Image 1: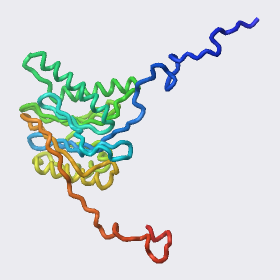
Image 2: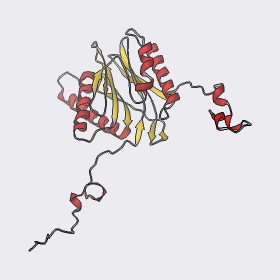
Image 3: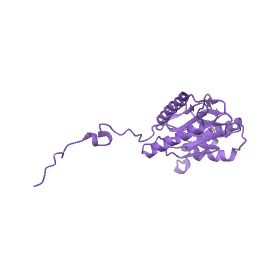
Image 4: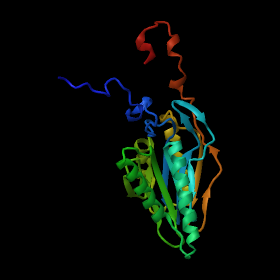
Length: 256
């Protein structure tokens, strides 16, 4: 005779994933509040980061006065694009790491090389758990008389050093400008102008970009995050102002 299954018809909520579970998975399924392009440029004597102050809520330009930079320790600066809450989580981890480093009292402090390596391992570890932090980071710094450091780390743990880098849409729009205009002995002022030029282009072409930006610098002695300022933009081109929907023919071709 067939044995009756005593568990048939019962609903084991704790064993079911998703919305029916008593303790659902706490994974970020998709970025919600996000930041756009971050530019990193080495210059003669230091390295800088530039980014706008916008955090978009989906497609809405919701938070327009957000700092997407974070100082880590004495000599390192971090710039983040992608999910803002994940950036806040990484920022908290960096604060804990810097505090632990200080409490050792061994006369040594971590620099940009150590912090960038740490962030790279964190990102790869989370990716390996299939629960990535949805960010692209630019980590820059200069420790006293040491070499300047500029690193890129993404949500998959991809890690590399460069002389200049751009995240987000800037990886497609800004990098050609950086390749053309960057040189090894570029001055701080020229590097700032180049960063502004890149972010201007991103503002014109990227719907998640904004015209208020910040620039942060590391020169081996100080880490500085500058005050936000507005960049110039122009929308008065003749072809953009033509009222093509009001022509006499009313043909579809008149709108192109």
